[in-house]
Image (cartoon, rainbow, N blue to C red):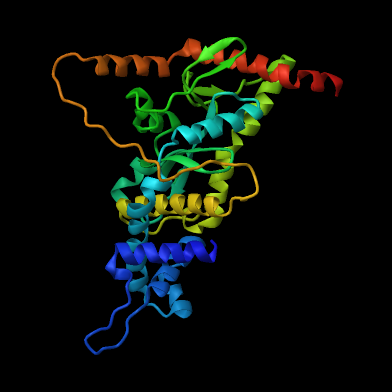
Length: 350
C-alpha cells in the first residue's frame, strides 16, 4: 500500500468515525492517534498476527487493537463498498469485453470460483454445519475476478459444508441480470449472436448459458486447445485469491474471531483494500482503462402490484435464459471453433 493511499484512508476514516480522531482525556493527556489505530489494524490484517503483538510496535493494548480493527473494517466497508464492491458499469463491461476478446473469449466478463477460510474459534455446536471436504470448519467466499485481478463480485459467509453449486444458488451474482438492470452485453461468435456475458468456471458449475466450462478428457485437437486456453484464463480468479491471501494474511490463516459479522466485515474490507491497491498501482502510461468509479446507477423505485406484471414475466424469462443448457452447449462449441480459427494455423505449424 502506497503512502498516498494510506493517508487517503486516514482522512476518510477520521471524517467517518470520530473514534479515529485523536482526543484528550479528562487529565488533558492526548490519547491514541488515528495513525496508531490504523497501523495496528492494518498490521493485524496484513500479517495475521495476534492483537497483543501490536503493542511493541505502536504502543497500543490488546483490547484497543481489537476495537480498532473492528471499527476500521466496518468503516472501510461503509465508506468504500459502494465504489470498490460494485458490479461493473457500462464502461467497465466495454473494457472487459475488449480485453477478453483479444484473449480469445468474446463476451467474457471474468472468472468465478470459491475459496474457503478456516474458522478456528467457531461455536462448538456449529462444527458439523461448517465442516466440509476440508474436514475443518470454514466459511466460503464466492468471487468473480477479471484479468487485472480486480474482484467484481464477493459473496461471503456460507458454511463450509456447502459446495460451489449451493453457494451459487444463494448468491446474488445474477440478480441484476434477472431483474433487467445489468448493462447490455452483445457479441457474436462463429456466426451466432449472444445477448448475455459469461464467466469461465470449473467443472462443478452447472451448464448454464452464463458459464463456459472446460472439456474433460478432450480427444480432438480443437477441443484440447480450447480446454488449455480456458483453463489458463480461468486462473484469473485463482490468482486473485492468491494475491488477496498474500496481501492480507489474516484470510490465509485461521479466523480467530467468534462473531460472523466481524469476519464478514474483515473479508469485505480486505477485498476493498485489494481493489484500491490495484487501482493505485495501475500504470498510468499503460492501456487506457477509462474507469469512472463514481458512476453508480441510481436505484429506481418499482411500483408494487399483486397482479401479474411484465416485470415479473421478464424476470422469469431471464432466469430461464440464464439456465439454458442449449445456449451453454452452443456457446462452448462456438468458442472451440473461434479459438481454433485464431490459433489453429500456428499450432499446426508447431
